[in-house]
Every structure is written in C-alpha cells, then in structure tokens.
Image 1 (cartoon, rainbow, N blue to C red):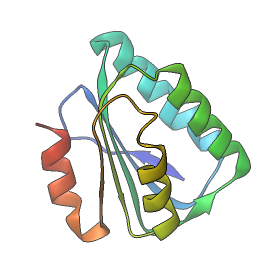
Image 2: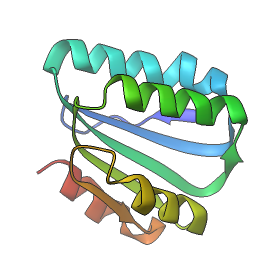
Image 3: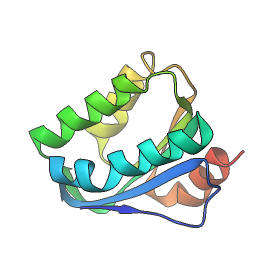
Length: 120
C-alpha cells in the first residue's frame, strides 16, 4: 500500500510504503501525484519511505516504478529513499548513476534527516 505524506513543500512528492506494494498502488496513488506536481512545478523532489511494515513490491509495481522513473528522468531535483531493507538501499546505490539528480538513502531511524534534506 502507498500513502501520500502531506506537510512538506508543494514541490515534494512524499510517499510511504507498507505491506506489499502493487502496480495498482502506483497507478492509483503515486503516478497521479507525480504527474500533478510536475504540471505545477516542472521539477520535483521525491521522498520514498519504506518503513518497517514494508514487505516488498509486486512485479507490476517494479515495472511501474521503472516506467515513471524513465518517463521523467530529468524532472527530479532530488530523491531520498528511507529504508532498512538492504536490497532496496543497494539498488538505489547501483541505479543512482542513471538518475540525473542527487540521490541519498537514509535508514528508518533517519526519517527526520531525510525530510530535512529533501526540503533544502
């Protein structure tokens, strides 16, 4: 499940993942939020929180993530990923060279630091 986090600057798309994230979650929650913010701002920052209740992605969710990322490759100013899941952190480090903006990973206990970083 994906939930949009509010209370951050308007150019920040902040989302929290829990349980198993599906392609439907991307299509119903995250992609519309990204598209709306891009229409308003042209470039956005993304904060993706995969907290302790996160259990994984379906194949469709991973495909939707790749599609939206590639579609808007130059539309991101910063990306922050908060997670203690080792394969997620490793994947972000491996693929960060493709993303044409600063990318930083944070542990779940560093959520406030991630929010501060994404907002500056």
